[in-house]
Amino acid sequence: MYQTGQHAVPDGAGPLVRPYAMTHGRTRPSSDNFDLIALVVAADVPTPTVGLEPEHHVVLRLAQQPISVAEIAAHADLPVGVVRILLDDLRAGGCVQVKAPMSVAKMPNTRVLRAVINGLRAL
Amino acid sequence: MDEIPYAIKILIAGGFGAGKTTMVGSVSEIEPLRTEEVITAESVGIDDLAGVEEKTTTTVAMDFGRITLNDGLVLYLFGTPGQDRFWFMWDELSLGAVGAVVLADTRRLADCFPSIDYFEQRGTPFIVAVNCFDGAKQYRTEDVRIALDLDDHVPVLLCDARKRESSKSVLITLVEYVLQRFSGELENTSEVMA
Ligand SMILES: Nc1nc2c(ncn2[C@@H]2O[C@H](COP(=O)(O)OP(=O)(O)OP(=O)(O)O)[C@@H](O)[C@H]2O)c(=O)[nH]1
Ligand SMILES: [Mg+2]
Image (cartoon, rainbow over all chains, first blue to last red; front, side, top):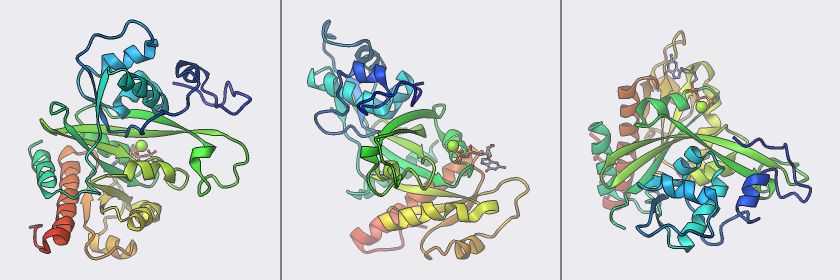
């Protein structure tokens, strides 16, 4: 677990020296934000042998089966923001596929809601 | 990308110690996980952490669990982080959510007011589940409804967050309620919920 406030950086970049370095100083992904429950799966391509940090490989290993951004963060023990940046790199390199969650609030879908009820009843 | 399921989420809210993590754990197919979001004052915005002068960072921890509903649908349950201070995190969590369960502890009923106010203002469908703690006075759901000043259409039910079947029926009640509301809007029929 990363301790906050222990290695404060004078320029205000934040205390997370290691993740900050790992992400090459970026604090947010360049493209759209990955939702906490966006599902990620490693693409069926050879893993690049250069240009990836060890943490990228951790993410790829976790994403052999579809897995949410939140689960990746929890299993890799990394803050969600760092995972988002790693995923941004991996997606740019074609190494992962990412599926945005279904926004039930924005697109009410009675068929999906019935499937949820049936799924819960069957548990 | 057909092989990737769709993910949806439900929030479990309520006051400190109301049983949020317990409920997530009782129905989740995985041990509840904890993830951390590091927030800088910049992203906190003006409406939170009032009076923050410098860039500071705060860590918000969230508990969550997972339920695979079928091949194409995965439900995530998020216990909301502490009330009052982390509203920006709630904004992210409630975005797109199916709805929310507000856990009420009858020993401290007022503790769930902030959650209820939040979901009412945001228009997120929610139900109130009264967690039956040992030794706490038993209330009727109608008394809780009055005490919390809930609209008539908001379901209120008693539960035991430690019990899987009880937590399951809380979730089913929420989704049936959401379905009823959507059906009302879309098909202009109100009697979907039996
Ligand atoms: N008797 C009884 N005890 C419960 C119930 N739900 C939770 N508890 C107990 O209440 C305590 C607090 O539960 P938690 O699940 O940690 O509550 P929480 O809302 O996650 O708490 P915070 O995250 O600290 O706000 C634990 O000791 C639980 O075992 C219930 O339905 N009945
Ligand atoms: Mg908790």
